[in-house]
Amino acid sequence: MTTTTPDWTALAASVQYPTELLIEGEWSAGSTRYEVVSPIDGRIVTEVAMADASDVDRAVASARAAFEDRRWAGMAPADRKDVMVRWAHLVNDHADELAVLTALEMGKPAREAKAIDVRACHRTLRWFGESIDKVLDEMPKVGDSSWAMVEREPAGVVGAVTPWNFPLTLETWKIAPALAVGCSMVLKPAENAPLTALYVAQLALEAGLPDGVLNVVNGLGSVAGAALAGHMDVDIITFTGSTATGRAIMTAAAQSNMKRPYLELGGKGANLVFPDADLDAAAAAAAWAITYNAGQMCTAGARLIVHESVKEEVLTKVLEAMAAAQPANPLEDDAPIGAVASARQLDAIHGIVVEGLGQGGRLLMGGEPVLTETGGSYYPPTVVDGLQPDSLLAQKEVFGPVLTVLPFSSDDEAVRIGNATDYGLASAVWTNDLSRARRVSKALRMGTVWVNCYEEGDLTVPFGGVKQSGFGSDKSLHAMDKFTDLKTTWIELP
Ligand code: NAP
Ligand code: MG
Image 1 (tube, rainbow, N blue to C red):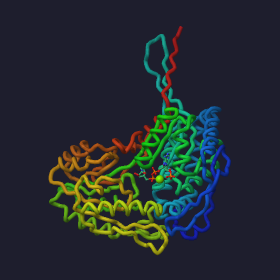
Image 2 (cartoon, rainbow, N blue to C red; image 1 turned 45 degrees about the vertical axis):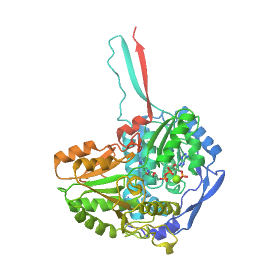
Image 3 (cartoon, rainbow, N blue to C red; image 1 turned 180 degrees about the vertical axis):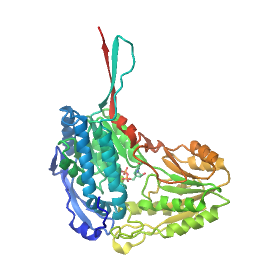
Image 4 (cartoon, protein in one colour; image 1 turned 30 degrees about the vertical axis):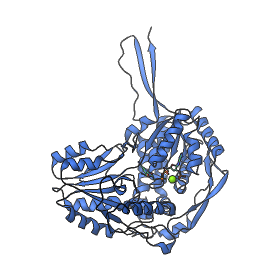
């Protein structure tokens, strides 16, 4: 990856990328086309092909044919590994293009897209690629007169439906483990963020991924996404997005061929700050956790659950740090945060803030869209205090830079408030007392608990939720298990 900083605005004007559907290794026109609108300034970036149900049928047929003739699953593991590692390196070679496309389609700073999203895409492809020939099958001890072999068989055709908040990262968290085990895939990227998906798919062809192993069907969730979820010839549907859509996908899976769903859904993350914590570190992290990516993170630290004895001190520091995280043009290299992903997302965020403030509470910062003169979609850091743990702003996922402050007076109360949502994705505990750290982190029903940090992770550890945040983790070797079926072959020896 280059370490120099390009002129993002110039690159945004000159970058070339595919705009069709990818089916059977060919760029294919869809039934119709739609406009991709940039949240930076409301300009139409391009038109891309839009898949309807018949296009999804073609893509699934292509993935099925690739799977059945074993053009990919049947390749020597070391050769499949080479393709994926080559692909990973091509991602790095095109880091600037991928970063600027991310900024254009969903509004995050190009600088951040390069440092985080492109890097995650590269590392995920490489990590799962390199794992291919290191995961072994099993041979249980069943006595002298028999052999039993337990093999991890690729599950077949995987449908993937992904969101726009970290388009490259979240797509690759699905693509890499599924392809590593030998499945083929049809990817439906977020309607407003198809460009990065198409670009990465183009690099896959360049890396030598056989035709039909990865197909991309841009389009609407209600059409192309629903067609995939309800398809009779898709074996697995893997999804990241909202809880409401997850429910629809699970229903469609049940009502069609009982394909198995894996759902990574919403969250209402919290920072639990205890009086013995390093309050400077906790406040800095709490401000970051709700402003990073303009708060459009399923793991966003949307609640500041803080001991009443240190509330004023922590809040002062949080407000100061959040005040510095103002939105700016994401093509400027020093933009603290960028645009929110779309005009629709801006309306959704602001609508929840207005409705939430209708229940009371004190607005300490933000609360109105900014930079409206740009034609883009920008929301400032927003903080609300004085609401109850069961209020709308303490419960509903906003998916924007909106922090709700909730005080507590005992450890039990902190845990109770922390757990009092339908979600269970991630939260952080801030304390220097090891026993308290262990007790509280154990009591939080979350897929991930961070102690004295936020959003730390690595490809070696799983990422996923409990409760209505979903099931079936991304990342780590466990992600490969999701895309395999265990097959037993029992051989009776004469
Ligand atoms: P979304 O509306 O659920 O969309 C996610 C994807 O599902 C998009 O590709 C969407 O297509 C598609 N979709 C919509 N309706 C569908 C249907 N009936 N059948 C099949 N697919 C359908 O969510 P979003 O608004 O894009 O993203 C924000 C949400 O995602 C937040 O709630 C956030 O918490 C969640 N999220 C969770 C994680 C996680 O890892 N747990 C990560 C990121 C985001 P369209 O683009 O056409 O709508
Ligand atoms: Mg949507």
